[in-house]
Length: 184
Image 1: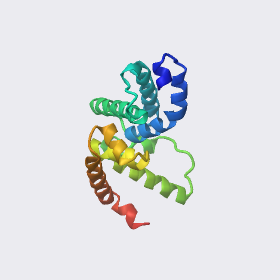
Image 2: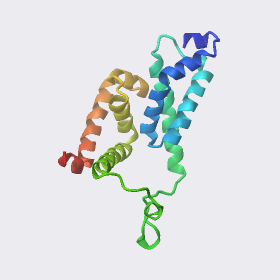
Image 3: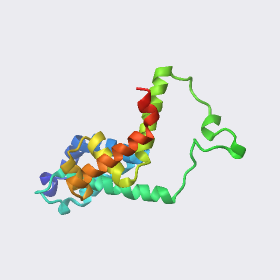
Image 4: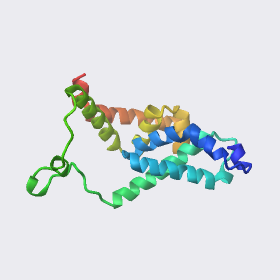
């Protein structure tokens, strides 16, 4: 980052090589959509480049980077909530088959793979349905494996608050995923 601040624009490529995959996965978990996450990851690094002079060298770069990505994800979530989309899961007219059921599908996968896919989907849906503050804590600490203190810096709150949010999120997820937990 210091090289980028010093006017060496090629340093952005090094930052992207080092951090793009983690930022992309973080945004995938936050948005639930790879295409949106890819767009937001690119926008994150555009913002890094444009805001190079606002970065303070005494702060940790990844905290600053995740803060930018988290803010973009929040803005995207707000935008999505105001601009409805048609779900493949929504029932068709007169309670008929959903759009997803009417579309041609490939051959079904083996039963075990299907159950695992359903479990992953259930977990992703459960996490996605959490309130923003709980979802952000789970994604940062559990999926992106950030320390509580670093997650607190990204979320602009205290480590105790992040711990509390993680506790509440885990409790809520246990309730929502009770069916899956009983089958393990």
